[in-house]
Image (cartoon, rainbow, N blue to C red; front, side, top):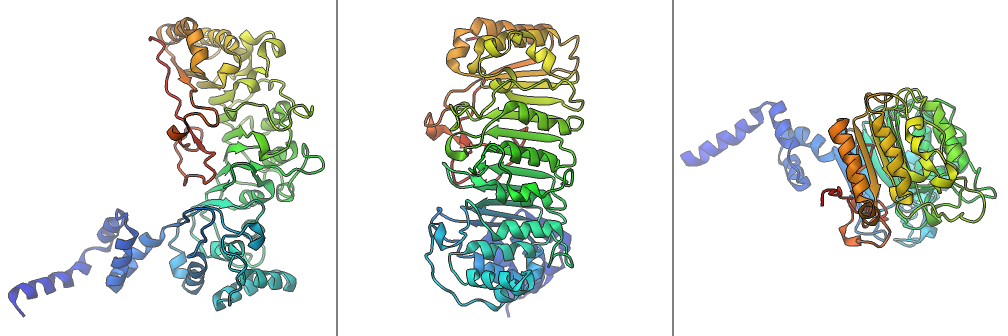
Length: 504
């Protein structure tokens, strides 16, 4: 062996002597899954260090809704066979939705498969009756039934911190398994799991219809849950859709859920479902609800009843965002006399509320000048004294009303609202241009005399079909700083509303 070769040999021998903490830190910044895989295959020492990084962020992403999750079944078998690998997973994401059987429209048809022994054993261990076991085994043998396989994968991920998942219209196995985990039912009474799962995002991949609320109740049972994010959720159209309550929500005891933050984009819940959702948490600190439009759900939208349920959290809510999609409040139920768009009552008694974003119609009614003759004082009377941040969305619905209401609010900066620091509205470019002098005067009053920041955002491109190629995936949370995988429906993509230059 040449001196050069000998030197290389000694170096390769010494590499594992680098402190494990240093190697782990290096591996943590490796973005390439292929590189991490090669490190795992290179040596036993590297295997133990690199494996946690390779498996920590698990994504099952398909090209489109017709493409199967080819890796789902073998991955489930791997984690059932080697649970030590599954324990490395901290985040799980699935896009597009998984299939819940061949009748769902079929990525794969109804091909029958021989059951892997790991799958069979897991079903037998998890089933709560012989009847359930038989049906589960039968469904698991269908190539198209990703629902029942995924329900076996999830419990193996005992150290999960977050789940980001799209579901079909009405899955059976995954919600049932998550609910059993949360309730501590068999087989999770002897092996508790998801004790670290704090965040879950549940979405639906259809741009027309929504995911039934039967599938979201499971999230509220999770023992460590803090943040629930929902997209395209709609209450089912029952005989009385206004008051319909999904059984999984109905069964949650009041104040039993640990969740502190709920964020719903483009959802529409019945009065009954909304009430149950509000009663499940022990104490909410943040609540965001954007009411969806169209065929999402036939359920009625009733502002007063929605507002009444929020009272349950009036001593803990710090951030509140109540809104409706840019296409407006002309929902599928319009003309049926089941909606109630009476302005919501005051939030003045919400003793923890610091920040609020609210749609114009929710604060002032559909026709503010008719519904609320004293609209000029509406914001002054409706907001708590400690409020710091106020944003009014869809201000183009009543542009004259918002000018008068904002002026009175600004004038109270040094009086009733000493903590107020930021005012913002969203309004169409046309409406802003027609009243530019008024908005310029408000900005000068707010910033020069009262020390507030005053922002007017232009809602151009807000409506469906407008500036489609300029849309970007919206982020989540009140501060819009939480990212999940883009939703397959494209319904979570919107144009970025630019700040209107009032000096031009």
